[in-house]
Image (cartoon, rainbow, N blue to C red; front, side):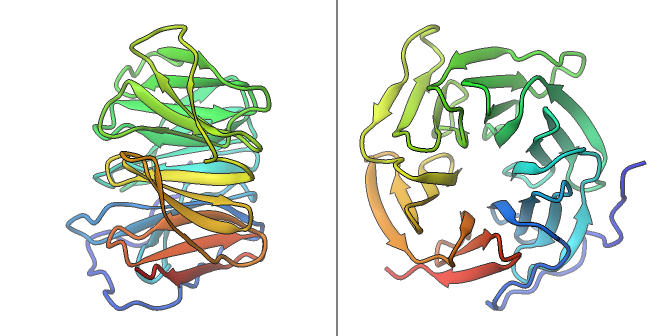
Length: 271
């Protein structure tokens, strides 16, 4: 049976800013994502090579619960805009959808090593990318189907980032190590992705926030924040050595980075 939450989500959330302490993982933290601010506060999901992604209090880093079931390193994790669903992707050739309140597993999709997962804003679609050189888009609501609704060809080398651009379900931004990011328009089946020049060199990981309009990414030893409406780099900032992941707090004043040293560190986003 899956691990059930030992803490409820109805408790009050801490509001003070403090360095995050995120105990529990025993291997490198490779993906992080804040939830938007919801009635209960802000949540944080963390993925780790130890196979057990975790849900945390986004202000303090306190553990809330663990999603148990993957049989290999977990490379990607995300949480829906209402913080009710979570998704994870792993080296066990599966992507999984979870109830983020109870911890129950809801769906499982297989086929390739998954390194990136993202919900559409309305959480009806899940996009995955990974070792296979293609995007896979799944219908979250089609409970009997485990096959992708749509697939799209990606560059050789696979994908480390895939997410829905703005609030649509038919435009995807993604990229892999050593690649520029690209945009796929799913309204044009078979069309080549449109590359975004000078955006993805040295890409380690990334996430989309603010309704898919802002890209946070780790590349070339720094955190970078891109406005995807204007395709403009807004800001770059420091991260700890060997950082693998970055996420911008929904308030926009700070970001966190996680890495191989098992820490998650907070950095101010100066304006």
